[in-house]
Image 1 (spheres, rainbow, N blue to C red):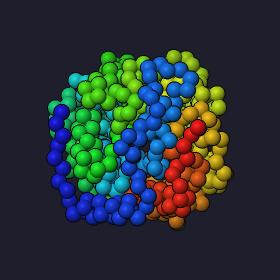
Image 2: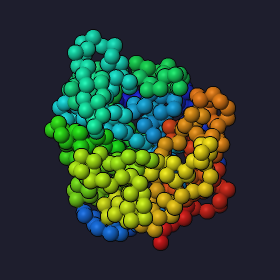
Image 3: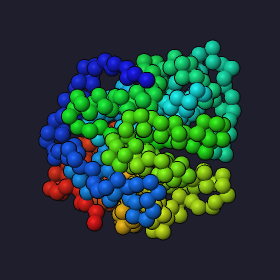
Image 4: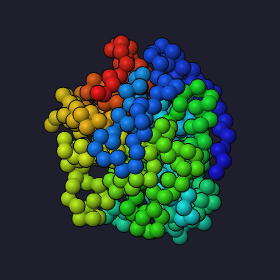
Length: 403
């Protein structure tokens, strides 16, 4: 696939100027030219496989900010325009969720059901594609990427997933295409060259067990793209995520690309549920579970409530032991997802009773950095980058290396 040329708007230039000012005022956030950490983590490396042997370990000049689905607080998520804006706002990495089309093309969508993130419901030529599927044990009705060829999907346009919460983003509905994984990687390469800093890409494989069950195994599709670009090494600018465990273990045997085990606040990885294994996310977040995760992954990415639990009133306080235990297992810690709207914030960081008004996202970022996390996901990367830079300036030291 070839990368589409993006038009830089005045708003985007203004955002870039703000981000540049933040970056100049704060400590440098780019990686060292050779800041890759130790030797590659190797295939099936066993205990001690974690980030001490992977990408950038101990060389980061500051905790990192990943733009969650791009600057998704400001533009329809998973569009090249949302990713470009995120980089202009100072994000260190961008995140595309990956699903597959009928003809095996990886595209960036939050879910394989696209009724809420594209204009497909308004397209009469695709009305007969509406159906119900069982996705990870749950019946879902809508339109699914696996029922479209990429040529068909490319005719659709993205829409804001939360229009009542983010009307400013919804104003861009109908303008942007659904990008492929290749196009996202092309964009990151272009922006790295333009900005002079390495822009990393953190794809998440969505519902790998489901896709495997319908003959669209995501693992070989991802590996093919990584190998074609020489992104299958430990110093790759790509890190691959999953809420499931089996596909990460498979990827660990096939590539040296850094891997991220995502942990939800409740429930269990669906691959384990489908296999009759009763291991839960809580089990994986335990000291023993984290040591097991470190056998195949470089990072662990717990839901933010696992790091800063909320009390009965919904307020955050003291951190749990998850970050400490993960670091002891030689895993770096990524926390998700930090958003500006009150409804997503702990009660002690909300600005009002208006669920859609912005509260103290900077305070939430700082609280997680105080808890020791290495990377934060945010829908509002401009706020997260500014909070990160302020936190680093206050501490007057680089983020602590692990022993």
